[in-house]
Structure formats: C-alpha cells, structure tokens
Length: 368
Image 1 (cartoon, one colour):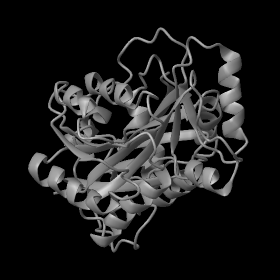
Image 2 (cartoon, rainbow, N blue to C red):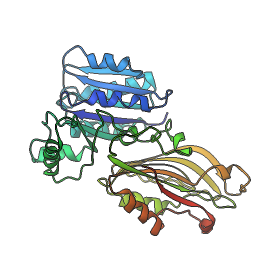
Image 3 (cartoon, one colour):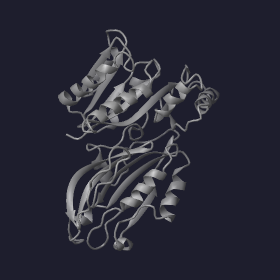
Image 4 (cartoon, rainbow, N blue to C red):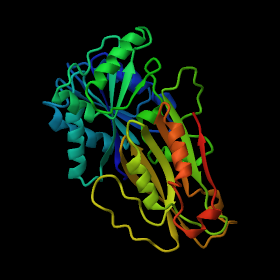
C-alpha cells in the first residue's frame, strides 16, 4: 500500500473548517475515498455526524482534549486505524479550535519518520481564519511566527460581509509575522480542491486528460489563484524521459509564496528525488522509462512510481505516441503565472534527457 497523504485543516473555533472540508467533497471523483480525523472538545461531535452524512468514507474522533497537547499520543493509533479499516485515498485531520498547526505537523512528521515514510506523507497544512471575528496570529512573537512557518496556506473566510478594510487589517497582521505564508480568500467557504489537496494515485489520471485538474467548473468570482499547464510530448521517433536535473532546478527555484502547488505525471529513466528523506538508489536503466506522480506543495514534494514501463525502442506508431513525457499543472498566486510561464519558455527550464529533444513538442499555456 502506498503512503496515505495527510492534509491538516486548523483554525480557531467557528472559523469554517468543517465547511471548507465539506465543500471539497463535490469536487472529488465519486470513487474517491476521503477519511476524516476530527478533534473535538466534549463528548458529542455534531460535526462528525454531519461529515458522515456527506459521503466521507470514514470518520474517527479524538474527544475531550486538544490533539496537539494531551491527545497527541493517540494520533498515531487513530491514523493507523483509519488507514487499515477504510483504506482511504487521503486523510484529513480537522483540529479543535485551539490546536497549533506547528505541534501537529511535527507529530505527523515524527510518525512518518518512525515508519520510514511507508505509511503516511504530510501533504499540507491549511489554517482557516474568520475575518469577521478576527482572532488569529494576535502577536508577532516567536510562537506566532512558528505557527505561520508550519502553515502552508492561510484561507481567509467570512470576508464577504465585512468590507475590504477589515480584510486588509487581517492581512497586515499576517504580514507583521515577516513570513511569506501564501493566502487565499474563500468563496463562502469554498476553495478549489487543487489548492487544498495535492495529487495522488486516485487523482493522477486527471492530469492525463486534456483539461487541467479541477478547473472544469464555472467561476463567477474573482480568481484568487492563476493556473498554467505544461506538456512535453515524446519525440517523433522513439521515446525519451524528462531530464531530472532540469526538473529539480525548477522545483527548488519555485518560491512557495509565488507558486502554491505543482502537480505532474511524467516519464523518466530513474525515479526523481523527493525533497526530504534519504537519497534514492535509482539507477538509470538504459532504454526503459517508468511513470511517476510528482506532488509539489509549498516548497516540498513527493514522488510516487505508478509503473507503466515502456521501452525507448517503441516507434511513434506504438503506445508511446499517446503518452506525453510530462504533463504538469502549476497553481500560482495572482499575477505570478505570466512571469513563470515566460521563464519556463525562455530558459528552457523543463526538457527531455536526450539529444532528440528538438523533435519533441512543448506546450505551455495559461488555463485560469
């Protein structure tokens, strides 16, 4: 079983965490299995009953305490139970209104390290802020900065009825922390799933289609992100994989406050290196390409092999013709996509690993 991605959703009481999660469900394929681990105070979890009725595959609760304090020791058991019983495609941890994302992220990473990354992978930490009743990041202390550092994305919620001045005050307080934490404004509690969730095996097939992931629904509100896609086809004869040095240079040069997520399906002769963990022993096998999922989230990334071994000796009349060497979706902050699109084009930042790359087709286009 591949490692199960974990997404942490945190925020103060009443900020709209459950609403954000429930708004993700209609955006997911019907066969997608999402499990929820909720942390509640008290012994009655109304939100969990709501989540269960909304087609989430499994719910487990940690009651009567804070998940980052006295319940932290129970986290591993709860996650393992969800993973073994439900076999979900992803687990979302929704914290109580007082939990700190830094403590929880550190504990999840400890559990991952204990199992050598074989059970879980931390995909992202999302903090939801209620603009109408602003109480987040009250000071610029070391503690507040640590919380912001371990938050990958801030979602400003309930801003529609309070005016821009109130939102600007919240944004200024976040800026006072002097940490480049990406942020977006929700649309009545809704955020595009591609920004909140990374790519995994059950979502990867959508990158193989003609549409960008998750952007097939109408938008009648001002966009909080911009999206562009990259496609590099195989050469006209034979087959070639992506040059991994060029891929690594692109991934390490992408600032997390300008590029939020990078999702890709690619072919390569050896497995791309993840951002953390030991260096992989991935020898190049001459003439053989394997298919990989790349999930880049706010400065860190994972790589998962999904097989589909092909041979470079296959002609353009074979199945290679149907498979691009790279299909990538890049989700940027507002006003950043044009700059990065031009950089990729002018600097040839992503390319094939053979001399025949001149016969390959590269297409970079703005989607949203």
